[in-house]
Image 1 (cartoon, rainbow, N blue to C red):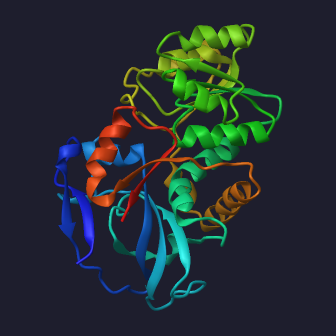
Image 2 (tube, rainbow, N blue to C red; image 1 turned 30 degrees about the vertical axis):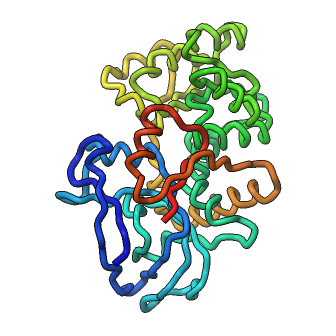
Length: 324
Protein backbone atom coordinates (compact mmCIF):
# COMPACT_ATOMS: atom_id res chain seq x y z
CA UNK A 1 0.00 0.00 0.00
CA UNK A 2 1.19 3.60 -0.56
CA UNK A 3 3.23 5.18 2.22
CA UNK A 4 1.91 8.24 4.07
CA UNK A 5 3.46 10.31 6.86
CA UNK A 6 1.00 11.55 9.47
CA UNK A 7 1.05 13.28 12.85
CA UNK A 8 -0.53 11.00 15.48
CA UNK A 9 -1.59 14.02 17.52
CA UNK A 10 -0.43 17.64 17.88
CA UNK A 11 3.18 17.85 19.03
CA UNK A 12 6.82 17.92 18.00
CA UNK A 13 8.50 16.09 15.09
CA UNK A 14 8.40 12.84 17.08
CA UNK A 15 4.62 12.57 16.54
CA UNK A 16 5.23 11.89 12.83
CA UNK A 17 4.87 8.24 11.85
CA UNK A 18 4.38 6.12 8.75
CA UNK A 19 1.03 4.75 7.64
CA UNK A 20 0.00 2.50 4.78
CA UNK A 21 -3.03 4.17 3.23
CA UNK A 22 -4.91 2.75 0.27
CA UNK A 23 -5.49 5.20 -2.56
CA UNK A 24 -9.22 5.30 -3.34
CA UNK A 25 -10.57 5.49 -6.85
CA UNK A 26 -11.16 9.12 -7.87
CA UNK A 27 -14.76 10.34 -7.63
CA UNK A 28 -16.42 12.96 -9.79
CA UNK A 29 -14.10 15.91 -10.40
CA UNK A 30 -11.10 14.11 -8.87
CA UNK A 31 -7.90 12.57 -10.17
CA UNK A 32 -5.42 10.08 -8.73
CA UNK A 33 -1.79 11.22 -8.53
CA UNK A 34 1.54 9.48 -8.10
CA UNK A 35 3.78 12.01 -6.38
CA UNK A 36 7.26 12.64 -7.71
CA UNK A 37 8.34 15.40 -5.29
CA UNK A 38 6.85 16.96 -2.15
CA UNK A 39 7.63 20.37 -0.67
CA UNK A 40 8.22 21.04 3.03
CA UNK A 41 7.08 24.34 4.54
CA UNK A 42 6.65 26.06 7.89
CA UNK A 43 2.88 25.71 7.56
CA UNK A 44 3.42 21.94 7.88
CA UNK A 45 4.97 22.49 11.30
CA UNK A 46 2.14 24.83 12.31
CA UNK A 47 -0.42 22.08 11.63
CA UNK A 48 1.76 19.36 13.18
CA UNK A 49 2.22 21.32 16.43
CA UNK A 50 -1.45 22.23 16.73
CA UNK A 51 -0.81 25.93 16.21
CA UNK A 52 -3.30 25.69 13.33
CA UNK A 53 -6.59 23.82 13.90
CA UNK A 54 -6.74 20.17 12.87
CA UNK A 55 -9.42 19.03 10.41
CA UNK A 56 -9.24 15.46 11.81
CA UNK A 57 -9.14 13.89 15.28
CA UNK A 58 -5.86 12.03 14.77
CA UNK A 59 -3.34 10.96 12.13
CA UNK A 60 -3.26 14.21 10.16
CA UNK A 61 -1.37 13.68 6.89
CA UNK A 62 0.72 16.83 6.45
CA UNK A 63 2.10 18.56 3.39
CA UNK A 64 0.83 21.51 1.37
CA UNK A 65 2.58 21.33 -2.00
CA UNK A 66 3.70 18.64 -4.41
CA UNK A 67 4.18 17.62 -8.02
CA UNK A 68 3.20 14.36 -9.63
CA UNK A 69 1.74 12.42 -12.52
CA UNK A 70 -1.97 11.72 -13.06
CA UNK A 71 -2.65 7.98 -12.95
CA UNK A 72 -6.46 7.91 -13.11
CA UNK A 73 -9.36 10.26 -13.84
CA UNK A 74 -12.72 10.38 -12.15
CA UNK A 75 -15.90 11.34 -13.98
CA UNK A 76 -16.41 14.93 -15.10
CA UNK A 77 -12.73 15.88 -15.18
CA UNK A 78 -11.90 18.21 -18.04
CA UNK A 79 -8.56 19.62 -19.16
CA UNK A 80 -6.36 16.78 -17.87
CA UNK A 81 -5.46 13.28 -19.03
CA UNK A 82 -3.62 10.28 -17.61
CA UNK A 83 0.13 10.89 -17.72
CA UNK A 84 -0.08 14.67 -17.32
CA UNK A 85 2.51 16.26 -15.03
CA UNK A 86 0.85 18.59 -12.53
CA UNK A 87 1.54 20.59 -9.40
CA UNK A 88 -0.64 21.92 -6.59
CA UNK A 89 -0.76 23.63 -3.22
CA UNK A 90 -3.57 23.00 -0.70
CA UNK A 91 -3.59 22.58 3.08
CA UNK A 92 -2.37 19.09 4.11
CA UNK A 93 -2.39 15.67 2.51
CA UNK A 94 0.80 15.84 0.42
CA UNK A 95 3.10 13.62 2.52
CA UNK A 96 2.04 10.52 0.58
CA UNK A 97 3.30 8.52 -2.37
CA UNK A 98 -0.15 8.49 -3.97
CA UNK A 99 -3.32 10.46 -3.40
CA UNK A 100 -6.68 11.51 -4.81
CA UNK A 101 -7.27 15.24 -5.24
CA UNK A 102 -9.85 17.52 -6.81
CA UNK A 103 -8.76 18.49 -10.31
CA UNK A 104 -9.62 22.14 -9.66
CA UNK A 105 -6.54 22.43 -7.45
CA UNK A 106 -4.12 21.30 -10.15
CA UNK A 107 -2.06 23.24 -12.65
CA UNK A 108 -0.30 21.68 -15.62
CA UNK A 109 3.49 21.86 -15.49
CA UNK A 110 5.39 23.29 -18.48
CA UNK A 111 7.75 20.80 -20.09
CA UNK A 112 10.85 22.68 -18.95
CA UNK A 113 9.79 22.99 -15.28
CA UNK A 114 11.16 19.93 -13.45
CA UNK A 115 8.91 18.17 -10.95
CA UNK A 116 11.26 18.96 -8.07
CA UNK A 117 11.29 22.66 -8.98
CA UNK A 118 7.50 22.71 -9.19
CA UNK A 119 7.16 21.00 -5.80
CA UNK A 120 9.53 23.57 -4.32
CA UNK A 121 7.83 26.53 -5.98
CA UNK A 122 4.05 26.06 -5.85
CA UNK A 123 3.38 27.17 -2.27
CA UNK A 124 6.41 29.43 -1.86
CA UNK A 125 6.24 30.98 -5.34
CA UNK A 126 2.51 31.64 -5.18
CA UNK A 127 3.00 33.07 -1.69
CA UNK A 128 5.57 35.50 -3.08
CA UNK A 129 3.13 36.31 -5.89
CA UNK A 130 0.19 37.27 -3.69
CA UNK A 131 2.44 39.13 -1.25
CA UNK A 132 3.90 41.37 -3.95
CA UNK A 133 0.84 41.69 -6.19
CA UNK A 134 -2.16 41.58 -3.85
CA UNK A 135 -1.29 42.07 -0.16
CA UNK A 136 0.90 45.11 -0.81
CA UNK A 137 1.29 45.82 -4.49
CA UNK A 138 4.87 46.99 -4.76
CA UNK A 139 5.93 49.59 -7.30
CA UNK A 140 9.31 50.35 -8.83
CA UNK A 141 11.26 52.79 -6.69
CA UNK A 142 9.77 51.69 -3.39
CA UNK A 143 11.74 50.19 -0.49
CA UNK A 144 10.55 47.18 1.53
CA UNK A 145 11.83 44.99 4.35
CA UNK A 146 11.51 41.21 4.04
CA UNK A 147 12.20 38.99 7.05
CA UNK A 148 13.65 35.48 6.65
CA UNK A 149 15.22 36.53 3.37
CA UNK A 150 17.22 33.31 3.02
CA UNK A 151 14.19 31.06 3.35
CA UNK A 152 12.19 29.52 0.53
CA UNK A 153 9.73 32.39 0.13
CA UNK A 154 12.39 34.99 0.91
CA UNK A 155 14.77 33.93 -1.86
CA UNK A 156 11.96 33.94 -4.42
CA UNK A 157 10.64 37.28 -3.21
CA UNK A 158 14.08 38.92 -3.30
CA UNK A 159 14.53 38.04 -6.97
CA UNK A 160 10.98 39.11 -7.86
CA UNK A 161 11.40 42.43 -6.03
CA UNK A 162 14.65 43.13 -7.84
CA UNK A 163 12.99 42.38 -11.18
CA UNK A 164 10.32 44.93 -10.31
CA UNK A 165 12.86 47.65 -9.53
CA UNK A 166 12.13 47.60 -5.79
CA UNK A 167 14.87 48.12 -3.21
CA UNK A 168 14.65 45.09 -0.92
CA UNK A 169 16.16 44.95 2.55
CA UNK A 170 16.34 41.43 3.95
CA UNK A 171 17.01 39.96 7.36
CA UNK A 172 18.72 36.60 7.88
CA UNK A 173 20.59 34.76 10.62
CA UNK A 174 24.34 34.49 10.13
CA UNK A 175 26.89 35.47 7.51
CA UNK A 176 26.20 32.51 5.22
CA UNK A 177 22.47 33.15 5.02
CA UNK A 178 23.04 36.87 4.55
CA UNK A 179 25.38 36.19 1.64
CA UNK A 180 22.82 33.86 0.09
CA UNK A 181 20.10 36.51 0.32
CA UNK A 182 22.41 39.12 -1.19
CA UNK A 183 22.88 36.86 -4.21
CA UNK A 184 19.12 36.70 -4.69
CA UNK A 185 18.08 40.29 -5.19
CA UNK A 186 18.44 41.95 -1.81
CA UNK A 187 20.17 45.32 -1.99
CA UNK A 188 20.85 45.25 1.76
CA UNK A 189 20.93 42.30 4.15
CA UNK A 190 20.84 42.58 7.95
CA UNK A 191 22.23 39.81 10.18
CA UNK A 192 19.70 39.80 13.00
CA UNK A 193 22.03 37.71 15.17
CA UNK A 194 24.53 40.56 15.46
CA UNK A 195 22.59 43.81 14.96
CA UNK A 196 19.15 45.27 15.56
CA UNK A 197 17.23 45.31 12.30
CA UNK A 198 15.10 48.36 13.14
CA UNK A 199 18.14 50.54 13.74
CA UNK A 200 19.83 49.29 10.58
CA UNK A 201 16.72 49.96 8.49
CA UNK A 202 16.70 53.52 9.83
CA UNK A 203 20.35 53.88 8.79
CA UNK A 204 19.76 52.45 5.33
CA UNK A 205 16.71 54.59 4.63
CA UNK A 206 18.08 57.77 6.19
CA UNK A 207 15.38 57.61 8.85
CA UNK A 208 12.53 57.55 6.32
CA UNK A 209 11.54 53.93 6.87
CA UNK A 210 10.15 51.46 4.36
CA UNK A 211 6.91 51.34 2.41
CA UNK A 212 6.10 47.81 3.59
CA UNK A 213 7.39 45.03 5.83
CA UNK A 214 6.75 41.40 4.88
CA UNK A 215 6.92 39.43 8.14
CA UNK A 216 6.57 35.66 8.48
CA UNK A 217 8.35 35.52 11.85
CA UNK A 218 5.67 37.06 14.06
CA UNK A 219 6.25 37.40 17.80
CA UNK A 220 10.00 38.14 17.71
CA UNK A 221 9.86 40.71 14.91
CA UNK A 222 6.43 42.35 15.15
CA UNK A 223 7.38 45.37 17.36
CA UNK A 224 10.51 46.14 15.33
CA UNK A 225 8.66 45.68 12.04
CA UNK A 226 6.26 48.50 12.95
CA UNK A 227 9.19 50.75 13.85
CA UNK A 228 10.62 50.24 10.34
CA UNK A 229 7.54 51.58 8.53
CA UNK A 230 7.26 55.06 7.11
CA UNK A 231 4.03 56.98 7.71
CA UNK A 232 1.11 55.19 5.99
CA UNK A 233 3.30 52.07 5.61
CA UNK A 234 1.92 48.53 5.49
CA UNK A 235 2.80 45.51 7.63
CA UNK A 236 2.07 42.22 5.87
CA UNK A 237 2.18 39.38 8.40
CA UNK A 238 2.02 36.01 6.64
CA UNK A 239 3.46 33.59 9.17
CA UNK A 240 4.59 33.07 12.74
CA UNK A 241 7.72 30.96 12.85
CA UNK A 242 8.58 32.43 16.26
CA UNK A 243 4.99 32.26 17.49
CA UNK A 244 1.98 34.55 17.07
CA UNK A 245 2.19 38.23 17.99
CA UNK A 246 -0.27 37.99 20.87
CA UNK A 247 0.43 41.50 22.14
CA UNK A 248 -0.87 43.21 18.98
CA UNK A 249 -3.19 46.16 19.60
CA UNK A 250 -5.03 48.25 17.02
CA UNK A 251 -3.72 51.34 18.77
CA UNK A 252 -0.18 50.31 17.74
CA UNK A 253 -1.05 51.34 14.18
CA UNK A 254 -1.68 54.94 15.24
CA UNK A 255 2.06 55.63 15.45
CA UNK A 256 2.15 56.15 11.69
CA UNK A 257 -1.40 55.58 10.39
CA UNK A 258 -0.16 52.11 9.48
CA UNK A 259 -2.06 49.38 7.67
CA UNK A 260 -1.74 45.74 8.72
CA UNK A 261 -2.96 42.65 6.89
CA UNK A 262 -2.82 38.92 7.60
CA UNK A 263 -3.39 37.18 4.24
CA UNK A 264 -3.61 33.42 3.66
CA UNK A 265 -2.44 31.81 0.41
CA UNK A 266 -5.33 29.38 0.13
CA UNK A 267 -7.90 32.17 0.12
CA UNK A 268 -6.27 33.43 -3.07
CA UNK A 269 -5.76 30.06 -4.77
CA UNK A 270 -9.40 29.10 -4.14
CA UNK A 271 -10.13 31.49 -7.02
CA UNK A 272 -9.53 29.41 -10.17
CA UNK A 273 -8.72 32.48 -12.26
CA UNK A 274 -6.12 33.66 -9.76
CA UNK A 275 -4.56 30.20 -9.49
CA UNK A 276 -4.21 29.97 -13.27
CA UNK A 277 -2.88 33.50 -13.73
CA UNK A 278 -0.50 33.46 -10.77
CA UNK A 279 0.89 30.04 -11.68
CA UNK A 280 1.46 31.21 -15.25
CA UNK A 281 3.29 34.30 -13.96
CA UNK A 282 5.42 32.16 -11.66
CA UNK A 283 6.35 29.62 -14.32
CA UNK A 284 7.16 32.38 -16.80
CA UNK A 285 9.52 34.03 -14.32
CA UNK A 286 11.27 30.70 -13.76
CA UNK A 287 11.47 29.92 -17.47
CA UNK A 288 12.93 33.31 -18.42
CA UNK A 289 15.58 33.08 -15.70
CA UNK A 290 14.24 35.89 -13.50
CA UNK A 291 13.59 33.42 -10.68
CA UNK A 292 15.94 30.66 -9.61
CA UNK A 293 14.36 28.09 -7.30
CA UNK A 294 16.87 26.76 -4.80
CA UNK A 295 16.33 23.18 -3.61
CA UNK A 296 18.99 23.06 -0.91
CA UNK A 297 17.80 20.14 1.24
CA UNK A 298 16.43 16.73 0.28
CA UNK A 299 15.04 14.01 2.55
CA UNK A 300 13.32 10.70 1.89
CA UNK A 301 9.60 10.82 2.69
CA UNK A 302 10.19 8.40 5.57
CA UNK A 303 12.48 11.01 7.15
CA UNK A 304 9.99 13.87 7.19
CA UNK A 305 10.61 14.30 10.92
CA UNK A 306 14.26 15.12 10.24
CA UNK A 307 13.16 17.69 7.67
CA UNK A 308 10.92 19.33 10.29
CA UNK A 309 13.74 19.42 12.83
CA UNK A 310 16.07 21.08 10.34
CA UNK A 311 13.44 23.63 9.35
CA UNK A 312 12.44 24.56 12.89
CA UNK A 313 16.09 24.60 13.96
CA UNK A 314 16.80 27.20 11.26
CA UNK A 315 19.29 24.81 9.64
CA UNK A 316 17.83 25.19 6.15
CA UNK A 317 17.99 27.70 3.31
CA UNK A 318 15.84 27.92 0.24
CA UNK A 319 13.48 24.99 -0.36
CA UNK A 320 13.33 21.51 1.17
CA UNK A 321 12.01 18.51 -0.74
CA UNK A 322 10.78 15.06 0.32
CA UNK A 323 11.43 12.26 -2.17
CA UNK A 324 8.44 9.89 -2.23
